[in-house]
Image (cartoon, rainbow, N blue to C red; front, top):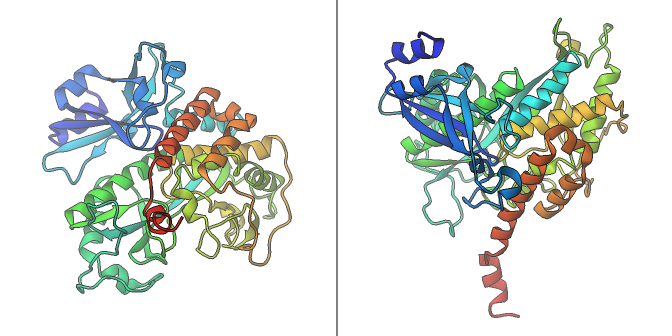
Length: 445
């Protein structure tokens, strides 16, 4: 039987297929199958509990979520995600899978299923969200000792950056071989990368994606992170998507531009026919204002995430909104009526892209269906505004657990399980004795 997938694999002489899913942390899990086995099987089976892994490989008590027998789930390939793995030594393909129960229903613990469900809620009202992520990351020198601070890598000049080179062309060119190969890989991997700039930090870069469907963009961000890390390794350096990898440098964000169009005509519902901002635009804004603090666990999922959210470090500490105001957590870029959009500047680049997309869209959706009204726009600097966002992981876990409207949209079982995964990660972190404690407490207290 010939299918588009079988034709693609045979045409490209593919030997193996990487069958992947995203767990809650955004790590790729799955199996590598020979081409013929992949085509004959038509599916992959994995234990449901694999979705519950923490970033350090532990699991909470999974009995409430998967039962005492830890059963399998069926992972079904999404043909739209099939692509070549350009850095592989042999001809290898990759395809992202959807997680299903044996009755065909979606596995609630799957981040991709959570985003699909949110998009279905929009679709039922005749709406279609459009997003465009901006991803910041650092290139750093190889470092095999986690106790040593990270350092900027050496470029073509043989020197590392000693200062901040925001928007510098020469600083980007210093890593030309890396970026040329990354660009080639992104094209072959069909990632739709649009622009590259040097960000404020030493060795910090930003990649922008063209706007499109949230599920497709989440897939591309999910794959992009791996492409960047693989390319960096080939050039003798590391690439990191930690939210705050270096103490004296700004953190890395994944800003999400978002708008909503009608499913039939594709008209932007944030604008009225005369070009002014619509009521739904302000409703959506209000939803972000009200619910971003409650959804913070999906925008800042690790202890390190909260180190980024510091005043005067190019990161928001508030959920104020303003026109072309980068000091606000919610920015309205200058645009014409057709392209009116909202930029959520709160998420770090360490997020699971499926969950960050689902959460920001869920916040806006709640604002629209409940006809919420936003605050007045902030005209001046908002760096002085503090206390509107959770300041640590424990606070974020508490707020997400307590927010019934978000649980109703994102899935009660998923939210409960996600909070448990994050709670276990925090418990593991809390056992670590830091260098600061040894330096300042060991002989002085």
